[in-house]
Amino acid sequence: MKYKFLVVLVSILSFTGYSQVTGAAPTGEAGLFNSAQGGNPMLNLVMMNLRVNEKAKGGEEILGSPYLTENFIKSKVYFGEEFVGDFFVRYNALNSEIEIKETALEEENPKRLLANQDLRVKYGNRELRFTTYITKKNETKNGYLSIISAGDSYTLYHRLAVKYSEGKAAANSMVMAIPSRYAHFVEYYYKKAGVERIDQLTQKKGALLKILDKEIKDQVNSFIKEEKIDLSEETDLIRTFEYINSIDTSS
Image (tube, rainbow, N blue to C red; front, side, top):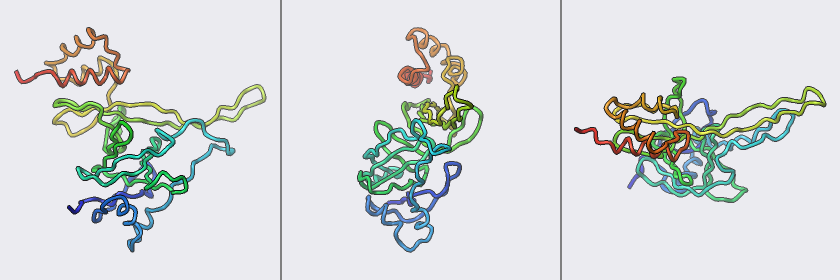
């Protein structure tokens, strides 16, 4: 079968913007990488190597990491329902970029995978999907989310986010310098069936009940009380959405 695959390669854009390159589907791992070696000047441009790891001012190392894991994990890459191949993947949560290699060899330079909404990467125990979502501040953004609970009424998503905080030099010998660092945190998003948008979820009972249909609010409220649900915990959040999706609203 001929894959209808947009060329999934490296974006030369920063994390603030995205570009799409269309073309015939490369089949398998070798095809994915070799497709950039042809005569198309744009493809040769996008095969630029990743930027070197940045350092804080003064050359000191930054504490923490922009990555979910520092090592590359063997992962399955799909385009739509079509399996493209097994690759070694590392997720840069700061820039919302997937870095990809053919092998686990240190000497192989990774590439940046071009973001596309048909792209799916089974990375560890999660499946990363590039999509558009809306934050609490009503900002529309693009990035990778993972579905952690899905049902007929609601779909619940997980997003790993990373914030960079620039350090401060010591004002004098009595005060310690504050190093620059990457801080990891998690956000959750939901999609209601029939609504074509994904919104950030506030992990408080009142906020959760507010997004639900009137006829199921009391049931969900009782469930949260009786089961002593803590919505700040992912396992309890998943349990709650599984319960919401189990409620029969047909009568």
